[in-house]
Amino acid sequence: PRIVVCGGGWGGLTVSKYLRQLAPDAEVIMLERNSTFFSCPMSNKWLIDVVDTQFLTYEYLRVSERHGYRYIQCEVLAVEREAKRVVTSLGWLDYDYLVLAPGIRYNYEAWFGNDRRAAEATKARFPSAYMPNAEHFALKRALHDFKGGEWVMTLPPPPQRCPPSPYERACLVAWWFKKHKIKGHITILDHKDGVRPIGLGFRTAFNELYKDIITYVPNAHVKEVDPFARRIKTAAGDLKFDHAVLMAPHQAGDLAWKAGAIGNNAEGKPTGWAAVDPVMLNLKSDPNVYVIGDAVGMVSPQFLFYPKAGHVANQHGRIVAKYIADRVAGRSPKGALPD
Image (tube, rainbow, N blue to C red; front, side, top):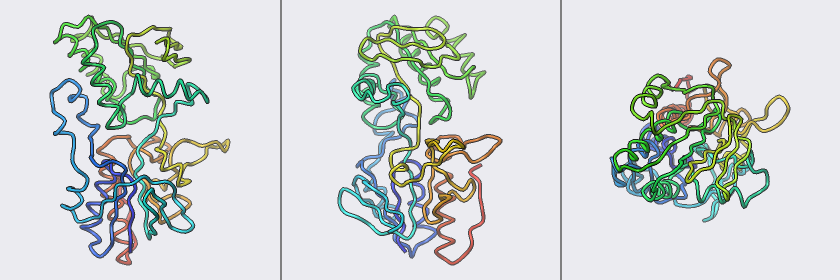
């Protein structure tokens, strides 16, 4: 049987590796548009030169050869689920099982509607660096070139990729300002009513280590963003900025939309996230298509979403590899949870 994995992030890499171990007779092909893996986890330390680029990057081809699966660099154009086919920039592939690991995309439409000029200007000039690689390099250049002034960070509303990371990034940028004697001030505009998660630790950092540099503003729901005038309006007040890290709301990555994997809410509108069985992680409408990582939608009435973080994507990859290996071997998979 052929198993096609779309996406080479933490989830896609993990499921490809473990499928080769657990289903050695299956053909495993991973499709990824980039040639090099760039890690978002640890990238905040990379921004301030605590770790170097080599620490965060790996060649996809070298990793695939080490673990024995096939890596093809291409763009996924469409997923034809009825035909069990993936259409790419290099042609198409049939599959028996499909694993989608699409990560996230930015919902700039929530801010700008159909104004693509404003959306593209925001992404180019004030990237949030939630997706590797180019955005991270742009943000690092902006930080290293920053001479002082107001540095604004908007936090996306939940659910979001890696909820602690913006607070961590603010602290490390503040550390950079102190170390290099840059007269900069950071304002954190948070949709939430308080710092979560790791609230005590970050609040202590804001109040004790960086009280003269960081101002934290809760309930700062974004009302309007003007990337040209460098102005932002929120429910908690308006600000002008010299540089900003503008984090728009998150959704499941484009691939999940192309595959028709997005669920609908009670009003019939898209939730923005993949509709999966909460334990088995296959699409509710297609048992042969699995979704792993940040794109997974609501799974529990208690805690709503699995944390959208690299360690959960890694666990999803291991779990789904076992599910598919069991099915290939003619066994019924037993449900497992990430933690």
